[in-house]
Image (cartoon, rainbow, N blue to C red):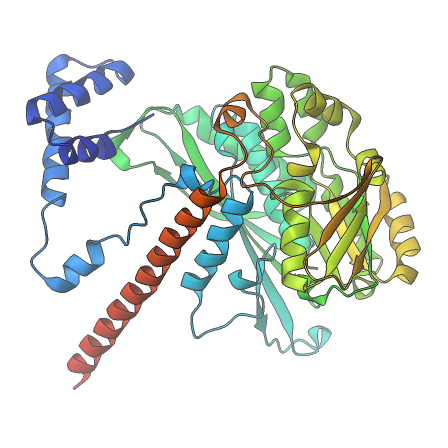
Length: 463
């Protein structure tokens, strides 16, 4: 895929001649599109003219302020954003700061939980005058662009998972899909097929959506990207801050989702992706709801972001507890074919998404919860316990005990990720964090300036 606007803007900043920029853009057009040279030339010229116009400095100070980005000097790739490791968690905590407004929800981005929630004061007696509206937005796996059905399937299942673990019954699925200019329309239908497969299997309807081109006319190529939003209703929220010292940790069997499917495809072990095509997680959560067991649970989570390494870190951080887990019990619950594949390609299974359900509950409630989930054909075991050692995660293995901490990036589950690596040096990490924190502060200051300007302008018109 070629971002022609980004390419032209980059070349202009490097003071490359207009003639050479046009030549580069024309080559990109002719590579992707079967069009005459003259058409490619006209398109390239239009792109460059638009970039030149948009690059001019605005005279109005408010417009200038709006258009100026509070750059950090650190790229998404350098920081590992989206890679579900420490670098990603750091940025997401800061995103939550920018997202904070005076209208606080019950469960906000700052809680670093699986989904968000607001209170709805209903008049219906069955809700005792109050219920929670739980919401989630989930992005598709970026490496599944050429495999739309599996991308749609797993992103939809993941969005529903995050509603269920907060104690919500999903009621709506919404789709947002973006395709580059040269993507075959069949990709759109294939993606929707994956989404609707989960909708059919789960009984949750698709209610709305949006389909657009990536960058309109200025991005060419065949990639797709997008995501799923979902809404659910809950009478009780299973939030991370409710976890208590003395709780036990239960974990269901897992075969992974988009990450494991990606590993299978790009490692040439395509058959393994079949193991990921199930809705066991959703069935397990339905069993808990149907048997009125949510009242016995303090919190549920799914093993996704950065695997157990990442999830337990975030959970302990939010709940201010310590957690001890037993590796042999965890390993037993990982699908055999998936585990063998991860071993073969040298991927740490504790650092990738497993699509497993984590339940934190009092020890005297564990047996009934486990038997209920086993009754619907899903394996589940007690894998550990919660203590009062704030933020400390300990893994008991055959060789002893070790701290289970996330790496800078999640386990490198494809060859390209292994080349990029999982860690960066401490000096670089601190330098990046300082720059990013400055960018966040500038973004918040900019937001306040624009809000104040809009309010003053509104007051002027009212008076």
